[in-house]
Amino acid sequence: MPHALTLNAGSSSLKFGFFELGDLQGEPQSRILGLVERIGQGERAHIKAKGADGQVLLDQEYGRNHVPDHGTALARVVDFLREQRPDARLAAVGHRVVHGGPDYAEPTRLTPPVMDRLAQFEPLAPLHQPHNLSGARAALELFPDAIQVACFDTAFHRHHPWVNDTFAIPRKFYDQGVRRYGFHGLSYQYISETLEKTAPHLHSGRTIVAHLGNGASMCALMGGRSVASSMGFSALDGLPMGSRCGQLDPGVLLYMLMNEGMTPKEIEDVLYRQSGLLGLSGLSNDMRTLEAAGTEPAREAIDYFVFRIRRELGALAAALGGISTLVFCGGIGENSAHIREKVCEGMGWIGMELDTGRNLRGERIISTDLSRVRILVIPTNEEIVIARAARDSLAGAG
Ligand code: ADP
Image 1 (spheres, rainbow, N blue to C red):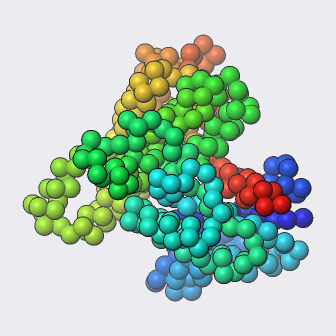
Image 2 (cartoon, rainbow, N blue to C red):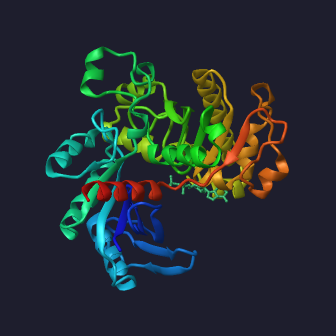
């Protein structure tokens, strides 16, 4: 029976999934899901993995410098998988690649020319793309006989309308690839496909998805397809995030450059790593920590986060010409009843009425029966989207 490995490399983490692909017709079956965290020089990396029914298979911290890069992290993952599943016949490896640029709107087999093209998008996603590609290079070496397929976070948005694809700057920049790409596409695809299967009447309508995790964005879906999203050229725009700023007047960048004399690297560090919830609270990028802290700056950071979500909700509803369904997903969207309640507070004017009991109990439908807008919580699953693409690629190569 063929198996697939899914890899999702962040700047200092590597998520992995091990799937059984059966006869390549049905749904890939997840057998192991895991995460290596704190990859990098001088860090004590940590690996954990769970089996299909949630049992912990591995939970281990490494010595300092034992996992200095993503290639080493992948080698550790492979050692663990070989030990767990000596029977494994790895036929496909699926990679989450953040940026597919203007070219790629579908999962794509990784060949040397495709890898070269994707490397050209590194400046467009400096914190993600180089790690995605180094993971892919390591996997190509480790599994030369497996099909390797890239799944792009930008792909789901590639067909959105031009007005949401461009900035109002001279057109030559658009032609160079300075566009509003949108991200979190694997998550939105999962939500769209889940709605199609479980609630087709909602899928065909106007849906806004709030993917609220450490990275956060929102997307407007018309009949299941992306028409607008809060993230743009880079994974910085839109909502404030754990440590990323979200929407920012470009004049602030000019001020930092010209008045503060900051270098581009210093500005990059501020916008990606020192802003968002962390920057406002001065405490943490982690929502759980902020909710527990109860200090004034922590509360203000949460207030700003919620305010921007509500503002984006109104904007996306206007882009859609209405809203019939709101979906929460991501670590915060799936787990924080408090944030969901604050987002939905006083939204009766748009037809949203939250059922506080259902919300607190974490049910799938958290709107009242009379609410015109259906409000749902759907745990997202980017790994299964990658595994399906790996399966389809393998079936196609048949
Ligand atoms: P990533 O973008 O790294 O995949 P996740 O989707 O895992 O992030 O989300 C991480 C965020 O979810 C963190 O801010 C974390 O505090 C938050 N979170 C997880 N569980 C809860 C919870 N029970 N209550 C509030 N926030 C939570």
